Length: 303
Image 1 (cartoon, rainbow, N blue to C red):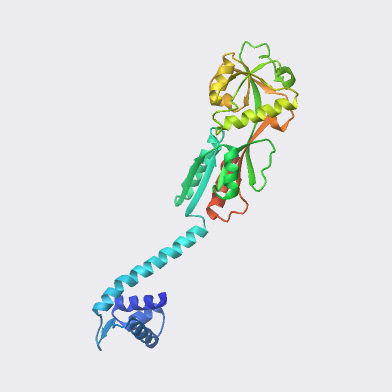
Image 2: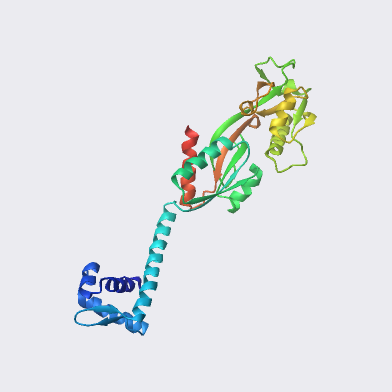
């Protein structure tokens, strides 16, 4: 049985006339009559009672009409769903983000996308950059917002740099170096640092920053002396501002939390002294909805 047969049957059933149904279907009446007879033979039941003056549905025809309309409606729904999926207007985009590094551009991209593609389901998953990368490579996430050392490639993923940030030295206002315009790492090797812990909350993005700072200091020939450890970036900034040690933090934190701390530019050409927030996704993805979401990221990143 074909959908064409159902369309023909419904037209005759609704118009109660083979002639008018043939006109609606843009076909001759004899082929339509033959098609209905073939359908009846296939079903093993008469669908219409025919007289010279009228065409009426039998009980079998009435029952068949209800289901035929349902089938045609479902077929139209299936076609529309396929078309919308191909256009990226339905589907799902699984998004990973690292907080709070990605909040600004991430939230603006989600808001802009939702306004235009309401039929697409967005599934959000918070995680560190190191947690997101394998999920992106294995297909567990469609797109991620990653914090990476500046210029750091990720093999197997396409990256869209969104924002660059430098590490700054955070000092208490009374510190002897607080009036400096910039500071090299060599001038900090005798200082005590407030750093994220090396153990404990390994899932936090700050732990990844601790590793980056350690490698940066190692390039200058020393290991940072730890005065205090704090898991949250806000706490690190506040402890440094209170004089419990100095800290190396991204410059964006200056705008994030009010603090009496003094921020001094770090004088270093190392790529480890800069951070990049980037959107990442697999070039193997064939999802039109993902393509639209990446385009939304591009638009908001330009503003």
